[in-house]
Length: 239
Image (spheres, rainbow, N blue to C red):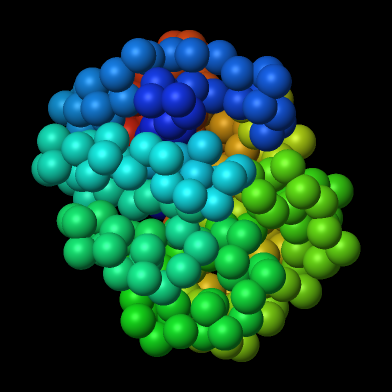
């Protein structure tokens, strides 16, 4: 299992939101590039960068910072937030990002999703952000009636190869991941699952590995020191 530090950007700074609430923001770094560089220097093999402004508003507001991160580190960088068109997807991949995540457009625009799959292949991630089993869009601010499990099945049938599944209620707060959801997702074995939301301890990482997920995105716990990256990397190396 791969451990993936998160760098979430809002207003040009590195922040974390509690349960997807933009009014409950904690600023951890003024310089997201420095944060990403630190995680890479400490041994991260991949970094997950989210443009929170872009995710909510539909336009990449922090694209220059995202691209600066990709240029500043030697490990692969994946990004999401504001990727609402295939043109933006192409531009982002061409700018040096290893993988690109599409969320809102994947839910609301089937034609764009199908074209994105054809264009990006294995470099496309679909972000499945769920609250109480239903998908949310627009940077977690808009609820839908789309059942998350059924949506994942649909993605697999269309040829999507990888998802990041976030339980919004667990994200950015002290708690634990939704292990039951990850067990159910991986049991189907139709696509690779990366877990996000609620990782607070090394034991959480061990349990996620036992669920069969491909990777785990960790944010707040790394920034607060609840999890030390070196120790976490040792754990996942044996999983």
